[in-house]
Image (cartoon, rainbow, N blue to C red; front, side, top):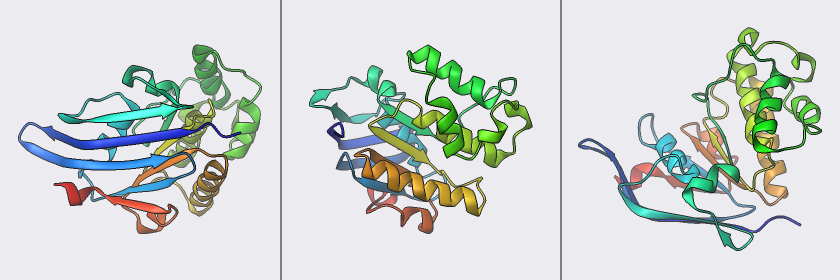
Length: 209
């Protein structure tokens, strides 16, 4: 059975110095929802995802994430939220398999799912190759795998297709469909209308400036 998920953001405000990114931003989403966060470059989409995952704190407002009826404190959100974005660093000296194995070991996860997951994102035949030899698109596929490794009930995708070719963008589309069917809450930050159209709901961040 899918794990019940409820995410609520109330009147969030965020700024850097005098520059206001957004204010009064509120929304709710649940497991099985797909939500696109849209806006221009620099509008605060990535910042909003950082707030949701709990690695940044809003100037005002609150974020509540409940999983299976239990509220998850901000410090514990990275354990139940998967995040993939082109800015997340990968260690060039590790292979794709070693990257996932390191994360699995650090989080006490089984190693059994690593090979199937690499196959799923199209990296099965490059599992032993160093990340430093990967193209930007291949590295993005690996980031998708890292986000999915723990089978998180919440999946945040930041510009997931930005460095991907047509096959990679099709992969993103299929992963969103699969995760929604599994009861995962999927949030996609994007300025690509085609990518936003993959989601059932849209939140335009520019409406809250």
